[in-house]
Length: 207
Image 1 (tube, rainbow, N blue to C red):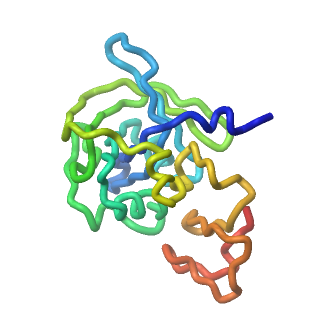
Image 2: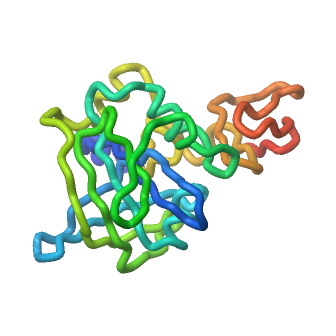
């Protein structure tokens, strides 16, 4: 099978966020799709089962989706795409608002916002598919969304938690079993320390 056939598809990058047990969670996704036009409009989004944000959404049943703009600051992608909410509070270093459901969201570097309520979940192997209906929506700017192809054209890989991750196969890199951080190397030194949770090399497993 030629995998490049479906790699021709392009996807918008978005920040999925929620609040659960008083804590804010968020991660970069690229799997948001509108699935119906009937009222209320329904969307689907899939999130990796290793994601702390995905686990929080399962508990809360609510989420906010903000679409990243083409000129979004790369620190936003770095913070929410490559770090784990199990180890840090990603929202502690950014200015954010909350929607009527209490979910945090960013305005800076974002095109628009959707507030969603989960109405169904479907287990899909390593991911969970959330079927949602829209509760609210808001436009922040007239710009276009940042897509995977545009992001990768800058020489960067899509965040590991993003469901459509073209450059990282399941058996590539090392994963921290404490916080979920992934290091994209064939080997890592014996004295390596996780940059997120500071776990030692012994806590890393080969993917």
